[in-house]
Length: 280
Length: 318
Image (cartoon, rainbow over all chains, first blue to last red; front, side):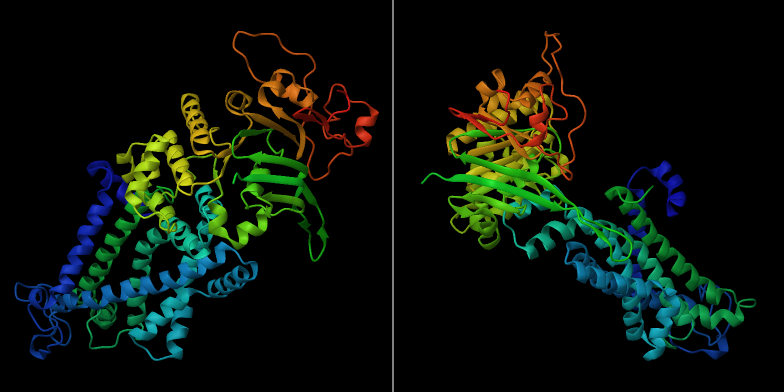
C-alpha cells in the first residue's frame, strides 16, 4: 500500500531511494533522541502556567500546552521513549516469534501443531483488545506494554518464519548441508534461519509502525507510559480537549508519529523491493 | 583399502496414505525402488539412467544416507549406510558426497563461496591450513579464487556447480553421487563439468555415481550404465555394449529416443503410453503394457535377471 505512495518518488529518484529517504528520516529522529537536551530549548517538564496555551511563535516553535510546557521540547524528548518503545516492542516479538516459527517449521509434528494452535488462539482475538486486557491484568506502564506486545506480536513472526522454513528446508542447499553431515543446530541457525528471516525482517520495519501506533494508542488510553513523561500518544491524549482552541498540542506529536512511521514504512518498502519479497 | 558400495535386494517405499474425513485412512504404499542389487567401486563411473519417476534420485538419496530403506540392504564397506549415516554423520559424509541438479539452489544464498568452503573445513580437524586447502580445491575444480568472495547469485551456473563440486571434494569422499548434476546447465558447460568430473574421478580415485536421463552424457562419460524402469534394474553393463547393443526393449527404446543430427530414420516400434504408477504396480514385467514384444507370460511373473558376462538384463525375450 505504501508502494503507491513511493512509486512516484521512485520514478523521480530511481531505485533504492526509499531506503535512503527512510534512513534519513529515522536517523534524524535518532539524532533528536540522542541530543535531546541540546536540541530542546526548554526542560520538557517545566511548568509555566503563566504561558499556557500559547500558539507557535519564535519563542515556542510548537507553542505551549495547557500547563505552559514547551511542546517542541516535549516532542523532542518523547523521541527517546517512542524509539525505545518501537525498538524493544519489535525486537522481543521478533525473537520469540522467529524462534517459535523456526522450531515449528523444521519438523516434529506435534510441536508444530502445538505452536500453531497457540498462534490461532492469539489470532482469534482483536490484537489491540488482547493487548489492553493483558496490560490491565498487570499494572499500566512500559514493562506491561512490552510484555503485552510480545505476547500478541510474536504470532506474525512465527507464521512468516514457519512458512519460509517449510520452503527453505527442502532446498538443495539444506539437503547438501545434511549430506555434508552438519548437525541440526548448525543447519537451523546457519543455513535455514538466515534464508527464512527475510520476510520477517521486512515485516519488522512495518511492524515498527504498528508497535509505535499501538504504544501511542495504549498511552492515549492511559494504560502505557504515565504522565508527566513526554510521549507522543500521551501528548495527543492530553491535548484532545483543546483541539479546537489549541490545535498545536496534539498536532505536532501526531506529525512526529506519522513522519517516523513513514520513515520505517519507506525502509520496509525498499527492503521488500530489494530483497524481492511481496508484490511491488 | 578400496571402498565399495553394495546394495542387495534393496527396496525403498514411501507411505503415501491419504487421510480421509474423521479417522479413515487409505493405506497406499509407493514402491520407489524394488529389489535393486548393485555394486559401485571407486575406480569407475557408473551412470544410472531412466525416465522421470523411475526412482533414480531415490536410489541416489539412499546411497547418500538420506532416504531410509524398507527392506534389503545398502552397505558401504559392509556397514549399513542408513545406520552409518545416522550414527557417524561426519565419518560417513567423508565417504559419500552428493551434488544436486540446480547449481545455484544447492548453495546457501547468504554465504560467499569462501564461507561455504570454510563451513565445510572447520569441521575437519586434520585440515590445518584452511586458506591453502581452499586454493587447492579451487585449482582442482578450475574456479578462479577471486570469485570466492561472491555470493551464489553473482556466479554463473557453471561456476556454482564448480563450487558445489569443490565443497563436496573438501570432504575427500570415496564416492560422489551426482543427481542430475548437469541437467540445468548450458550444453557447453555440461561438457566442461563432465570432463572435470571425469578427470577428478581418475586423479582422486573417487567413484562417481552419475544419475541422469541424458543418454548422450552417459555415453561419453560412464564406464558402466544401469537402466532403471519403475524402480527395477532392467539392464546393466558396460556403457558401450549396452548402448550399441541393447538387449532389453526399454533400453532399445531409450536409445532410439536420443535425437541424432543427420539421421532421420525414425525407428520401429516405439513405446506407447505412460509409465505405470509405482503405487499400483502392474504384476509381472512393469514394461509389459507398453512393450511391443510383450506376451501373456510377461504379465504373469516378474522376469528374472539374465547374466551374460558382465551384462545383465531382465527380459524373457532375449
